[in-house]
Every structure is written in C-alpha cells, then in structure tokens.
Amino acid sequence: MTQESIESAARVFNGLTLVGALLLWFGFFMLGIIARRYEIVFKKWTGWKAMMVAPSGILVYVFFIVAQILPWRLDASSQKAIEMAAYVCLVASALSCLILSDRFFRFIRNILSPAPKAGA
Image (cartoon, rainbow, N blue to C red; front, top):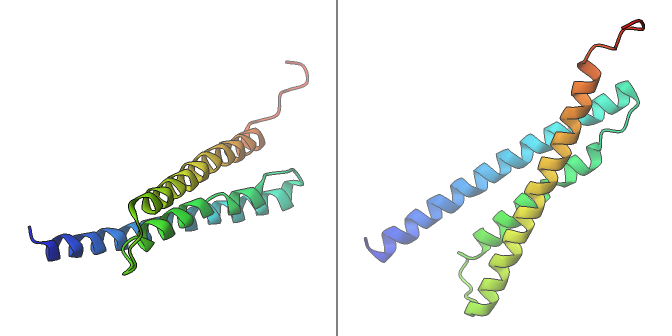
C-alpha cells in the first residue's frame, strides 16, 4: 500500500467514525427527550438533563481523533496527551450513558409492572 492510499483510507475511516458518533449521540439525546416526557407525565425524576449531556464525551472523542489528521503536526508527547484526553472523555461518556440508561429503564420497568394486589 502506498502512503496515499493509507491516508485515503484513514480519511474514510475518520468520516465513518464521525457519522457513527453523531448517530450514537443523537440516539442518546433522543432517549433524554423521551425521559423528559416521562418525567413530565409521571412527575417523577428521570435524570433527563444528565442523559442529554452524557453523550457529549462521544463528540469530544471524535473531535480529538479527527483533529489529529488536520495539517498541523504536534510533537509525540502532545499527541499522546490529546489521545489520552479523548479516550478518557469517551470512557466517561460511555459509563455515564450506561448508568443513566439503566436507571431510566428501571424507572420504565417500575411504571409498567402491575401494582401488587391488596390481599396478596
């Protein structure tokens, strides 16, 4: 493979990464909007604000990764620091999305489960 084909493949990969991250972010953002509507209807806390902010780390990760292919070049230590910051943002975002989504789905399960009968 030539250097040109490698760079072309990297651009395609980074573009697909950006599109995938935007779709993932949009999905979690929509889940936050759904949680907000449940909170309004049932007047119980769902954590919708946190659910809408949590996936932002995904966008930060993609920004840092895509920014590496821009024309400016950084020294190796700066590039490693940027990569580490990107991965920390991604992991923090993933964990918060996981915890908040699980919390919301438990909320939904409690709402949908039938109430216990008085004599049982």
